[in-house]
Image (cartoon, rainbow, N blue to C red; front, side):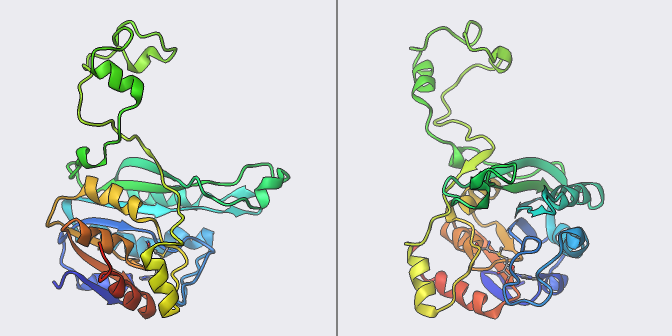
Length: 286
Ligand SMILES: C[S@@+](CC[C@H](N)C(=O)[O-])C[C@H]1O[C@@H](n2cnc3c(N)ncnc32)[C@H](O)[C@@H]1O
């Protein structure tokens, strides 16, 4: 199987030529329901039909993943007839109940720079939505997970505790939420804290080198996820040399990050202009 390439085609067809159990990690963001068509026929999917549309692709993803492989799905829902549609949750149930994926963790990608929109008037009975979902599924009961590369800096208070200078220990801490502190695990300096399940990354890349390339080429991908989001999952979910697949690769963010960290990669996209653009992106400074 050829690696480190973009394949122009519909992933439900392209994936059929991949061997069973040949991919270590899938990170992808398919078109969300009722949103852009990206110049691809039938890519604007009604929310009620979403699970039916994504099902065959998800089956292929399951088949090509290695037994210890993972699948991270970045997706969002939308408000339909006044209420948030449940297709994302129906999809998660389908993936787990029908395809046997295991849900490892539901991550929230919080975008603190979500611009003000109609919800800002208050008259729609809800706030704006400033997050998307990133569901991490495993195929089997073992999967690669490296916490060290995604650890964050300890808070000043925690750093004090780790130096033995904090006030009191786990047993006598005075927080109201004592439940998680009195367990038998000792506080140990791991070089950084567990970042938790809310990933806060502003999606503001209008000044980056890639954006400038897009403007030069006159091809702008409207729905890229940030490089840091791909870094979070690729660094934690794969090892050097692993094969990372993005079956809806768009501007190639997943593949760009995989290359940067010495992973093998394959991107698939139904729009040829995006494949060409993504290939150009790989030549940019990493
Ligand atoms: C949300 S975008 C992915 C963006 C990507 N994560 C990035 O950072 O640039 C979804 C992509 O899926 C592509 N697409 C739509 N239907 C497809 C299909 N059946 N097979 C492969 N790609 C498809 C679109 O052309 C679009 O680029």
